[in-house]
Length: 236
Image (cartoon, rainbow, N blue to C red):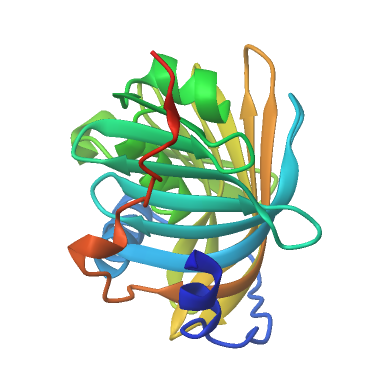
């Protein structure tokens, strides 16, 4: 079971880390995000998940750059109610209680239909890691408001918090959605948010509250697989 894989590997809940506001230059803000992105390649975690459009429970989650995701949603009693996999451009969803499954392309439309997240898998992984994708530095400027620093691009604004000699994102805004990060803690020497909230501008909110986190785990390719019974019904 995926849950046992996660629980056996995740580190215990670390202590919280806070830092006062610091003025950042464009180079400092940019390089801080670049360093963060390079240091984060994947995660393994256990979180409480809720969606405003319906669905909640304990989520066992594996994610690896660029766009591989495996998740299992558990009931309060620990039974598997939903399993999903993004791998090699495909989205596989399996409902164990109904013994039904569906395999489609991992497009934003299908991600929205099945997971209420109309994003590409690569975007989901980057947002889960709190390491937003960046374009060329020349397309960004730095701004400040109420002692808070942000990077402003053509399609994206990233609010930043100076932490531990680097920076971490506090909020990401773009035309389609906003992501809020909070309750940063130190995990394996890297600051990571235990609380993630994705607010879609067309409606719908997705929240994760991590209990256990393991960063940059070694995840062999067979890990990204779902075992579907031969007698399961395929949905076309």
